[in-house]
Image (cartoon, rainbow, N blue to C red; front, side, top):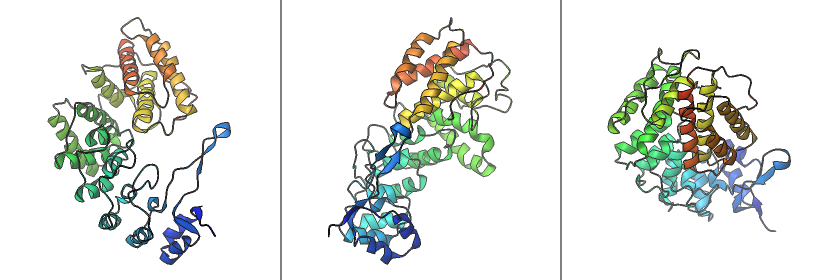
Length: 364
């Protein structure tokens, strides 16, 4: 009787139970290369089944005994174990599992998909601090990411209002081990600096004592003026909005730190414009558009309305921005998003009187 190509539905529960014999018994009826059943994605007419090709190596809470059984049974750790990742990528945060894989021929520099690069590349993009540390300790190359971007840029540019500590910790690890930087690294440092400043009120003393020196070292290394927003500088949503930065990128980071809250929507239209373009850019450029959908389109529609409600007689070409917004999709590249951000910054500087944000139709 032919074995099944899909793993049993309760496979994770079997692993979690710690019953190794029950785990092995699954493969009496399933192929060793069997994968998780396709997952339903989307809603209504847009609902479809997504096959992520996740085999047994992709599951959580495996032990070296599970991994050894899979390898001895013929499952290749250097193959596509799900999403275009190798087994090492899924197991890197567990030092014992990583050692077991390496002892059995798993390749630290394996690139299953050119889109994602090596396991260390993926750890940096996913802000997996423990995984990155284990991979570096195991000897992973810090200057051969398998993709065009430098590892430090990938980590820092995946920061957002909810992820500040992880990119800073990974950046410190990489620099301590001599990682290469690029012309883009400076902009990435400015980006995480804005998020750090906006998030600082929510961090405890221990976190600030750990992260502030890393942030300051990055500013020093790249000769950047720190994004410093004191309690007095944080915008009160009423006073005229001012910025000190000289370039639009510096001004954007400063506006984010001043106007965008650590969570939730901004209180002013100007702050919400900055928040929307930041969220949209992150989703497209850093998250691969995985969550792209109707709510992001609603955000862009609102952004267009916000921009057209302001006086554009200054240096901000709103008509150009409207044209860019109409063409934005999950596959838009960096250039038009940067141009749109520049126009938004110019428009806010030309219209510094805060406008309260009313009701909006989007959730993000």
